[in-house]
Amino acid sequence: MELYCLESDTAVKAQSDPNILYDERVLQSLLTIEDSFLPQCSYFQQVQKDIQPYMRRKVAGWMHEVCEAENTNQDVFPLAINYLDRFLAVMPTRKNYLQLLGAVCIFLAAKLKDCRPLSAEKLCVYTDNSITPRELLDWELVVLGKLKWNMASVIPNDFIEHIMRRLPLPKDKQAMVRKHSLTFIALCATDDCLAMNPPSMIATGSMAAAICGLQLDHNDQRLSRDDLMDLLAKITSTEVDCLRACQEQIERVLASSLQQGQQYRPDTGVRGGSKSREQQDQSSTPTDVRDVNL
Amino acid sequence: MASHKPMLRSLGGNRRVCRNLFGPVDRDQLRIEYQAALREDLDEVSKRWGFDFKSDKPLESSDFKWEGIPETGVPLLYRSCVLAVGQSEGLRLADRVVLTKRVRMEKENIPQTPEKCAMELEGLERTPEKGDKAGLKRKQTNITDFYQTKRRVVWMPRKSGE
Image (cartoon, rainbow over all chains, first blue to last red; front, side, top):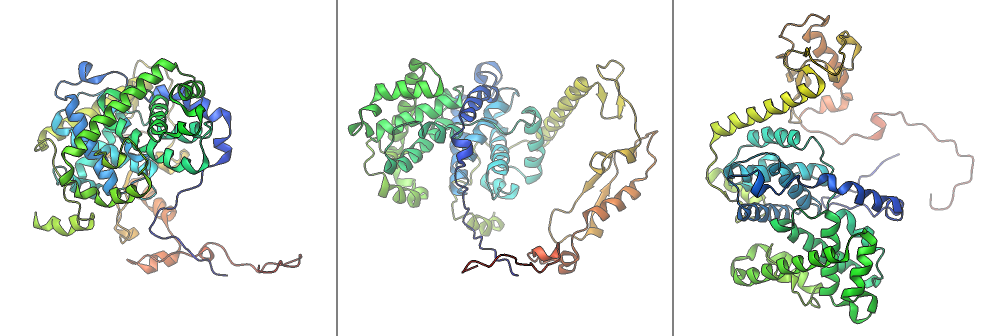
């Protein structure tokens, strides 16, 4: 008897488990526990002296680039940002350590979510060797301690499938709605104003923005802006007004990010590959996600 | 910097991502703050559990009543010796270092020496012989390394294609 191993380098993702997806209790549990993984306070005013909102944007942008360059699992980046925010909400940190902290958060999130975790050495190279692997491993312990080893945070990505299967989406559009929603979620993670929103809110707002952006209401009245809001609010048991405010904030972030993307377009050769790939299947997107410079 | 170049290339030639965002890090300061942060964590758990983990003794004021038990009575994992297992795959068992920094501190109720403990660990950590012999190059193990193959008695007629 011979056993053959047909695994290749490309990560094979597990299919969604209907036992999890079609059990009402799962979404309810996610909604119940999500608040316990939010940062404890708005830390720029209350905890941090050295760190300004623009610095968080800067480190978050860099973290996203690292995750993109390493092609990590989609959950890694939002999870790493969750760790970053929770840490900054409990521990005053110097701005010079912010990149070290960002690297540690990616390191931890990749261990939890990726089938090929990133090495400490690699992450240090991404900081232009401004930190050493030893320091990264040391601070890993500090971050774990400050987060009380509570690493399995609920993130917006966790809600996507649960919300999506409760919406009257045409089958052929589901993949694109999912993709756009995940892109918007990543965008939200880089924005400091949205950091205090519960993950379900970010997920719902991102999905609403994605559906509106793709103009799916042209064929189905149920997906029009107002009807969609009511439906989404019902699914996640939130207030329609909160949800609408969140969606509008996401659309503002998206718009400003599109503007930036246009300004800095010439030197974004890095993303050329992924951009051209996206161009094929996103040509119908009015809010042009192709130009998002996350 | 030249020495990093091959590594950078292996990162997919993505050099723009490799950058230092907020200037140089003060190494000594970082070290001090790291130790302070760990100490803070330790103080916190000490208070929570009413136990001084540095001296391995219960605190005077504690919500818990602590009872000493012989070290042999607890699983290996919880014993007071730190095993620094070689990270690289090529490292042989014999090269593994057993640190005994905590064991060296005085303890009244340890019947076991760190050496003994290390030997047991070696026994536990032993992988199938094939892996040992293979040395540096690790070969994919077959399931038959762990279980003996048994001939299956087939009662039912096989489906075609099986």
